[in-house]
Length: 102
Image 1 (cartoon, rainbow, N blue to C red):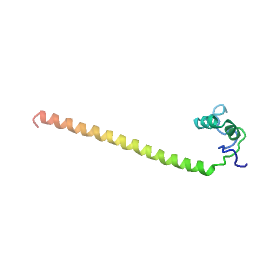
Image 2 (cartoon, rainbow, N blue to C red; image 1 turned 60 degrees about the vertical axis):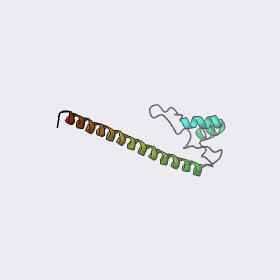
Image 3 (cartoon, rainbow, N blue to C red; image 1 turned 45 degrees about the horizontal axis):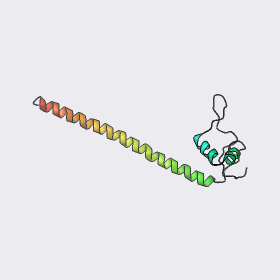
Image 4 (cartoon, rainbow, N blue to C red; image 1 turned 135 degrees about the horizontal axis):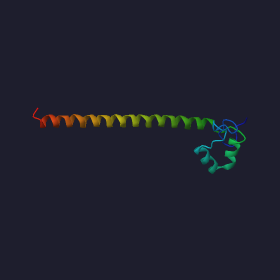
């Protein structure tokens, strides 16, 4: 196949629902269809590969890197909440101990 029209495809109707073989339309495909319906059709139905494979690979790499940053952020946030809870618990135990005269 030749790379034309700027379409991404993994083959004709490649994204199928595994239970009943119904085609699955992804959100990114809706954006592609809104931008150029013909381009979407050529890639999705006819199976033409994209003319921008390198750019799409760079975009995927950038999304992967950003996703890793987001995952690390949420892990650090979770750790911060655990540490905050432990600090509050230690503070409460200190106040309880002080109140009992210990």
